[in-house]
Image (cartoon, rainbow, N blue to C red; front, side):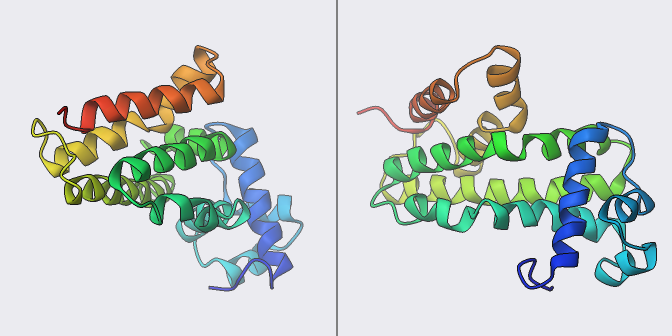
Length: 197
């Protein structure tokens, strides 16, 4: 796959796709719409992305590049213990949701009737679940995971707790400040996942 930094046309396509997803709501974002927004021909668009599914997946992955998610994850991945990793993971992912929320909302709205949007959404949510699994594994390694939950159950619970939908309900619908959201998610996850002495 060509790097966005070395290919300005690809970057323009991805940026146009993001803008359309954020502004069109549940309306289908067609390849012709994207080509028009990127100011290129449909043929040129298909040279970069052979199908819409690949383009949607590339768009959500490109957001990870734009917001340097790998660097942002460093504190979680290098945490000295499971509890620190849990709190760092929640801080990173919880802080990332507002930046991708527009695209996430569009893909969620489209996924029941649009297989390509569902594939793009599932691709990213699988990556988030892997992050949750790594955190839970660190808790297990430290002997901190509550005996009330199996490792897979703890991963499922953390993944659900940190869903985009939960963030939207608390921060958008209920107007929680971002800092409060992060703090409460950290406290809630610790109480749910970490064994009491």
